[in-house]
Length: 101
Image 1 (cartoon, rainbow, N blue to C red):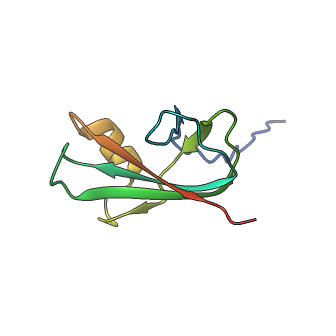
Image 2: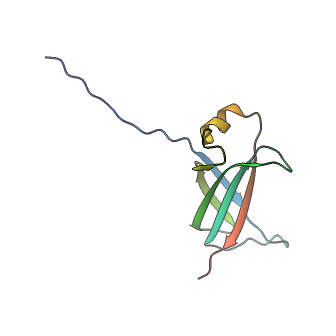
Image 3: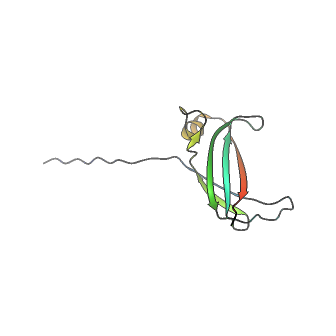
């Protein structure tokens, strides 16, 4: 008797990203916050390739930790893994918005 198993798995590329947000005086920002992360093709005057929005992100002494997978990309034929493995350089922009509460 022969048996076989079929394993279905979903592999999703993610990149761990953390940072510390401060105000203009260098004081840490407080959370929770909405953080939008953009991936760009150039350091300046570039086009954003992908973006991801995180809501209710906890900030501890201004520090945040995110797991980026960039579900929204400009070119629907090229997802985050394409840019991750086929680009020589990429730039990240982090946009902070305090959550009301």
